[in-house]
Image (cartoon, rainbow, N blue to C red; front, top):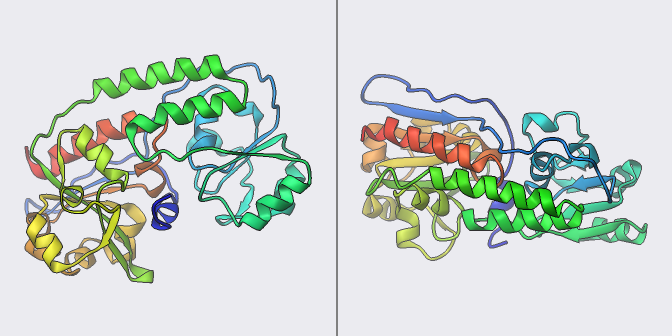
Amino acid sequence: MQFSVKVNALIAASLLALTGCGESSESVAAITQAQSISLDKQQPTSPERVIALANGSAEIIASLGYLDVLVGRDIASTSKELKGVPIATAGHQVVPEKILELNPDVVLVDNTTGPATALEVIQRAGIKVTMIDEAWTLTDIAKKIEAIGEVIGAQSAAAQLVQKLNSALQDSGKDHPGVRIAFLYLRGGSAIYLLGGQGSGADSLIEHLGAIDVGAQKFTQAFSPITSESLITTDPEIILVMSKGLESVGGIDGLVSLPGIAQTKAGKNRAVIAVDDSLLLSFGPRTPDLLRQLSSAIGQVSGR
């Protein structure tokens, strides 16, 4: 985990919409849901009771066809097939009592899962806690699927899902060469305004589509504070944000009032793509469809 911001970047909602707002001077696209690549239902083996708290792990287990082994999930896992699975946390915090009540065989966690003292209590109760590496690039997705498949005894299904995933990723190509995009992480209530750089996660998505991540081009760190200079010199044509981040700064009007944004091409044209918080950096079975929608949205707001 490069940055605690990445933890907060995976918070939830749903629904698919791709909409243009206003007249020609304003172009906004919203992506709020994506379809998962998935396999048919599989016969559970061992373990039979899994709580998936690692980011995206519940979604991957469901896509592997092992939804029936899930007895708990994290609050950020919001895909529609998981609605019947209990949330096993209090907000984003692990509460040992909630975990123990669900009587799991194994709990999947990652570096963002905590507090550590809660995980220690769970382990002392004799429950296996398994660490799953986070995925922050497209190439990490297959590794994560395989790791989860190994833990839940679904190696064959994992191999099939990876094959389908890779095929779907190959279908989305470099459709937008030269389009300059800035990923902004915004939390207006906490006065957090950051420009994504190398390793933010969004850079992998943007570059896959052939566009230029202007923050990654300028900064080697995952996130840097937004300044007028950094935005004016990078001059993005499109601004990519998370939906709740855009809402937190007061929508488009609030966004263009932030330092330097009004002076960029994106700010002048109000060219913004807003993606559901739980979807944008999910790096899992929904990512290929997200890329398809991102490609359409880039074409919509850039006009090319």
